[in-house]
Length: 363
Image (tube, rainbow, N blue to C red):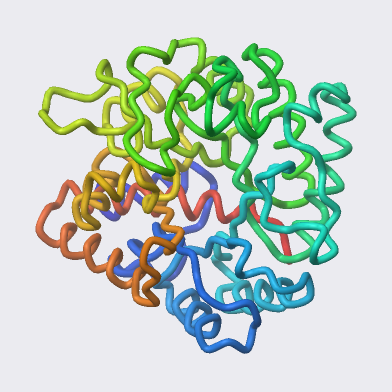
């Protein structure tokens, strides 16, 4: 897609293209990174805000070390948003409830139970009220994206990632989709974006992608796509987060064992082709063991974007680097300058990102 194609896509999505559309800035919008610091006055936080202001960075990812107090979080987020008011940054966190949360009672945030408990105790409508309170509180702190809801099916009771922590709403796609819809609706009402995860389904896995390679070839079933099919079809998918899950039946013809997050067959073939998802695809953390132990940074970035990932998520925890976003952006730009097809992928991703950011609520 050439530049005119980007403008055409933005027009189709009823979004005005941002004024600055240099290759470097388009590539920068594709990057979300973890950062150091827990106060707005920290040198590292100011540096991140400067990158956002320059258009060199699309957003940030919060982890627990960034949360000193709710007041400090709100001040940092205000600085991030003020740095780019016309194209707001993705200010992201994982706040599912239960064990997976960045904002806790220790700093005065009202915690809620995990998904399994929510579904056991509440109807979808009642769950929606619970999530509405949480979403309002998250939005009030200046966040723009919550990485949820979990769309995985609770099909393996011994699962180390989903079942162990009660992160799934149930075993059936109908149940999961109903509670996911309640979660998404509540967040939309608060002006927040969400991310369905972990495509194509982590619920049947027998290993943890945080630790290393995960092969779902023998455990995964097509039923795990059904929540995505339902939610995409009904318009409840902002981001879809791609997991680092390998399936030999969707790995292409090469010799490299590509997880879904680096697989054109999963993203282009199944998610976009079969399920008709036209929105933004975000990777799971690209520093998780399933990726970091198999692929270098350059290979990871190029393969992910070529496969169809629009937003590259790096927790920046494997070996913290204040220049990680710059390194990733340089890889993107260098590859685009050498390969017109890769440049077209960046332009395509930029159009989706601008469209999505246009739906972020006011701070």
